[in-house]
Each structure stands twice: as C-alpha cells, then as structure tokens.
Image (cartoon, rainbow, N blue to C red; front, side, top):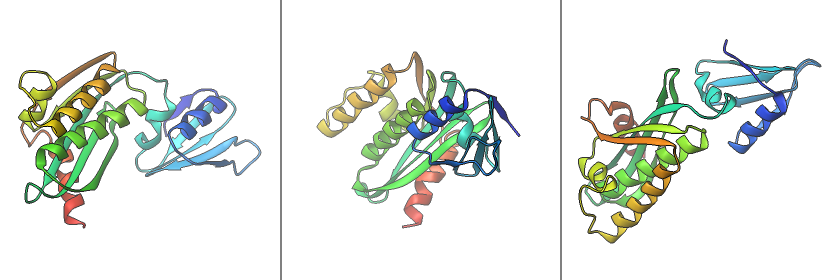
Length: 197
C-alpha cells in the first residue's frame, strides 16, 4: 500500500480541487476518506494511505506537484465527418495515472484528434505535472502544433492555438508522432467509446 507523507488538510484540499468527494473517517484516528476510480485513500495525522486495484487514480493528486508524465492522445471518427470519440492516457513510472474517453458528437477525424490532445493536456495540468512528453499517431496534428505545417482550416487553427496555450503552461514539453502500436491505449479507448454508443 503506497503511503504519502503529507499534511492531511493540504491533501484534502488537493483532492477537492480535483473534484474528488471526501468523506469523514470511520474511526477517531481517520481524518477523512476518499475514493476515485479503483483507489481509496485514508488520511491519518501525517500521512495518507492509498489502497485499491489502481492506487495511481489518487496518487498523482496526493503527491507533491510537479514531475514528468507521458501523455498519449487519439481521436476517431467514423465517416469523417461522422460519429467521433476521443481517448487519452497519462503514464508515469507508476503506470497509467489517468485515462479517459468519450464521444464528442459528429465531426472529422482531425478535429477529434485535436479534442483528444486538448483534453489530455488539460488533465495533465490538473494533475500538476510540470513536464510532459506528448505522443500521438496523427502526423498532421503533431506537425501543425509544432508549427512545421500550416493550419488552413479555421476550426483546426483555433484548436491548434488552444493546444499551444496548454503546452506552454508546462515548464518543459515535447510533442512527437508515434506509430499507432505505440499509441495503442489511447486508440483503443477512443474506439471503445464509439463501439459502446
């Protein structure tokens, strides 16, 4: 069971700011309890004990801010334009810290890719990482965001600006194109969201 040495009041504030519901403890020794995904946390005088199938669901919020994460993103559209979804994953040395997917209505594949990138970067910033290595299998999105290719479509240009704003909020970042096999988790999440409609 991972243990985070910290002030329980500070840890509680971090959890609440991240949208995690915090409840009273079950005993006189427990300051509070919280659950997120497959993890639960219990606060004592000077530490928080995290348990469950995926402790990383809470560890990234509870640990001191900062650090480095690998961020994977992918968008999918069936029909182009057609029903679309996004998938993303944030990975550290602790494994997958966070991941998500959702349907985003009817749009093009490129717009879905941008939405996935924006969502993944937003979550990485919320988790407090100050360095991100971002990976996606869309060469177009990667090259446009890095400024190597022009962005003629006004809708994509707006999303490119938003992605760059999010990236520059980190102390250090990289953005690389990778083969789909490397981006498998984000790709699977986006397609699962479409399949489960």
